[in-house]
Amino acid sequence: MVKLITDNILDLTPQFWLEIGKSIQGYVLDDCRAGIMQDNTANHSYKSPQYMKYKANRMERFTTRKYKDGTVANKGTKLKSLGATSVVSTQIYPVNMILTQRTINSLHPKASTKDSVTMAFAPDKTGLLNGNRDRGYDIIGLNDKNREQVKQKILNQFNENIRKTIAPTIIIEVS
Image 1 (cartoon, rainbow, N blue to C red):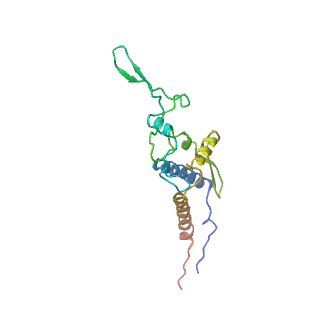
Image 2 (cartoon, rainbow, N blue to C red):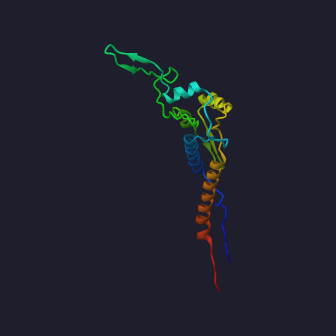
Image 3 (tube, rainbow, N blue to C red):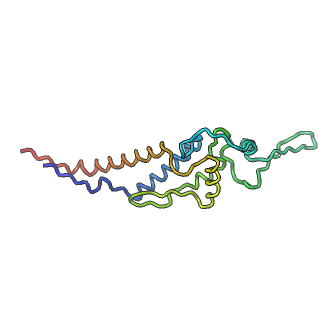
């Protein structure tokens, strides 16, 4: 006689989904670093030559200062919109969607249930995300590779649940 208890095999906890959310944040960041967008496109070029020039220069002004002793130095003050914010990436090809990394860092699990996780960017990033999407740089959603990674994590959890549930409950009687 074989007795199987399958009630817990498909159970996933909110904590599991929070872990999935943290993984998703890492997947999106890794893709951005590689210039891969979440709409399965890659190797984009910036459309503004001026933006490329400033990003390569850490968003500093192109000014020089001549000192009394004759030496010349790049004054290089940051653009007003960035203030004291650190520039993390000066990569200009491919488009990597990382300048200060604040947008990607704002992606976080907003809520989780036993069935899903809801991911959200910070509300103040909405205009930036939509503007970049209009330019073809879409980091909202998940690309095919990341969906597969999430599916694999879910299947691994189901396998773990099977191992925990079925292995101790199989009873084999030999007469």
